[in-house]
Length: 122
Image 1 (cartoon, rainbow, N blue to C red):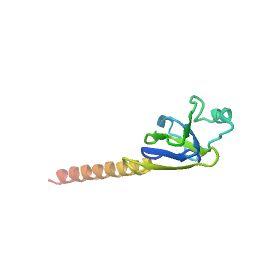
Image 2: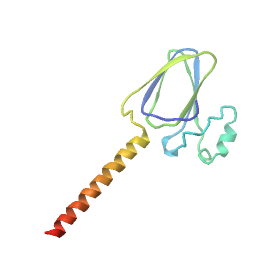
Image 3: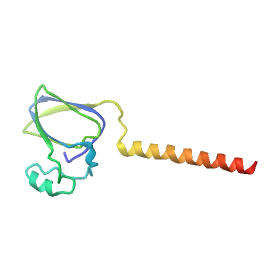
Image 4: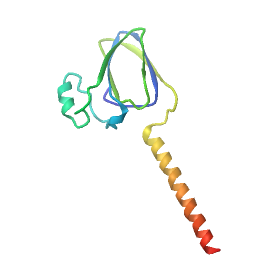
């Protein structure tokens, strides 16, 4: 996969192996960024990657890998592999949560303005 993120996830490999690249969520990574598996030096020239080396690991059959919420990651099968993942916790995306938060803030501001107008009318 290319880099992407979501809520907490347990990832299990039943057969084969998978390679992972993980980055800290503080990068605010553009999830359209491609994972350049064979060219990490090229990735490091990218503005997101100048100061970060991805955490690289290989997950083998029978192992579980926990990826915390909003950690950008990319994964690829090393040969034939079979696995599954289960997201747990808050399954809403970062943008959805931000939009919801912004909506709540706007609603609170409108309510405050409305209350001020009523006080002025009195």
